[in-house]
Length: 343
Image (cartoon, rainbow, N blue to C red; front, side):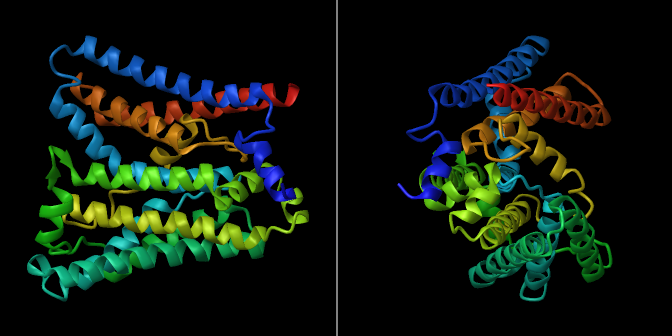
């Protein structure tokens, strides 16, 4: 086994890792799932016959689909001990770029060729912006928090300059909306299927490929990884590029669902996604995390928000609840880290 593989094995739960560490990772996902089940049970009891109906389950899954796609990318970023605060703005920028092209090439009546090109535009814009931020983090040695905070403002500013701050009408084709946005296969929305495919794909990448091994190893000990000959800077560019790619995909999904860019509607996307990823057990200190945990973590805020709506809690309190959940999740993560260090 090479040095980098040994290092990756030390943080990824592969053979050679102490049994207690593998059990701790599994136990964390189990406890997160228990929290999710407890929330479902609470709202079901609080609003009998109104919560967890077939309609509610479908809506929760659809509403969580975009955040799940974003959460997969954020999982990779946070595992490297990084952060990306710009995801909402990158999503908006990618949606505006694709929407403006669609607007000038047929609008709502544009054909499948235009739809395909709009998808490419959104993915390309997101990937380029993410890779640019990754390059600044890697080469400029600027903290990811600062880089992506600047990227948040810059991406949103460019989107507003391009549209005059207004959501353009006709930003999405009816073909895109009727298929990806509202279409179903065997009763399952295409949005949910797409999110599931992305989750399964990148879950396998993280758990079973060299790219995943290097991501985990960099978050655990970047100095040791450099000594093993792994190009840390180049890998960070790829990780942040992946986050941008999935933000671009999120833009396509948003256009498909709502038919508009919603320039002002993504200010808290970063809060929701980071909350979900940390709830799922990915450590803000890097080196540990899983896509499965993120899946569970994404549905906790989704269930919480839907449940609060059902029982009649004002929207402002929903934002408060999500913020409190994030703080608690970080606090628990710190306790787990201290426990591991003592062990």
